[in-house]
Image 1 (tube, rainbow, N blue to C red):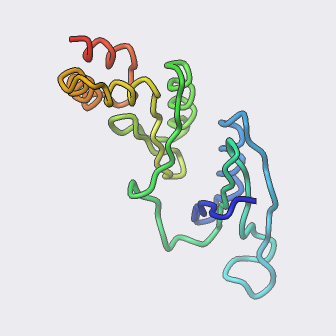
Image 2 (tube, helix red, strand yellow):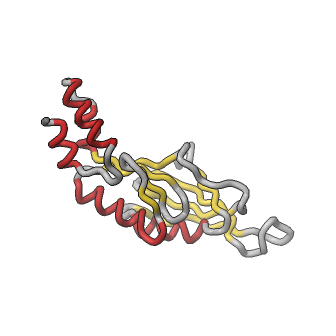
Image 3 (tube, helix red, strand yellow):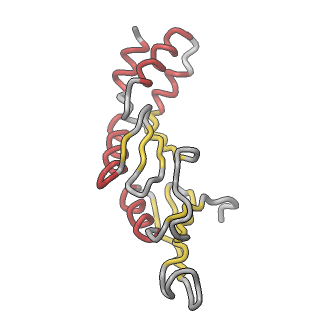
Length: 157
């Protein structure tokens, strides 16, 4: 068992969110669902927490009510090996009400922030030639979803 697990606070969509993430990530699995009992802040039987695992990382989805909202101060980063992988996660996570942002960031339909990050972009940003790295950075700053070929072309001048 993992010692530290992210806990995602939802109003009342914890189980729906868990099922969505399980559908997006192929290497995922559902865990336990705990339900509110009698005399609780939500009706008895309502999901309290739903645990699940994505790519070996355990998460807790909590139905805590409308008191707190997600924001960009915390995001989940997806390391992508190819443009096809970037496109897959981008399309899945922005579907049905998700919102693209800039520089590879987006919010899914539940408001959770994600970074869809191509490994090649990180390599280019760490290039030992500072001018090449800067051109890659400037190209990335103009993008919403990262286009690896365009970042590469910009880095190459």
